[in-house]
Length: 198
Image (tube, rainbow, N blue to C red; front, side):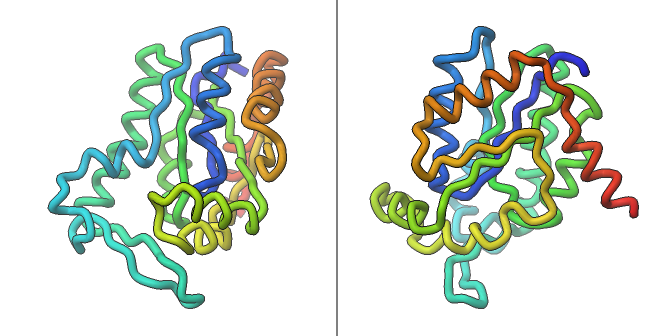
């Protein structure tokens, strides 16, 4: 396998991906950039927040907040995914702080990511702890984490998984750092692509 240059962290909001990224920055010997889905949303004009052309929330079948993307929002997310690949192609190493919201997002990642040099990492957290963190942080719609918990890992295969329920960001980062240092072969992307062909 080529040297990993994209580390994609997928997990619910409040799963601890941002804290994990900070811990990875402190531990990894090389320079890794951070880029994530919140950065993509932040690039949209404020007029397209809570807007059917940009993004808005409604409720799912369980009554939890559900994020929806309009045409401009979909274009922004597609551009963000391709920007990650362009950064890696330019020689950067990128940690992607991602919430794969639905099958379309998953499939677009599979379409654009290179065949080699990508580590897929599932960031898991127990539902009770997710909900506690979401309430404590105060900058998320309460219930969003519970809604994402039901499907964020659907159809995903990972090279490595970490569980932040009780493990600190530093411990989880160490698990990933050791995995990267070993130069282990990444298989997740290829496995998902094969599964989709069957």
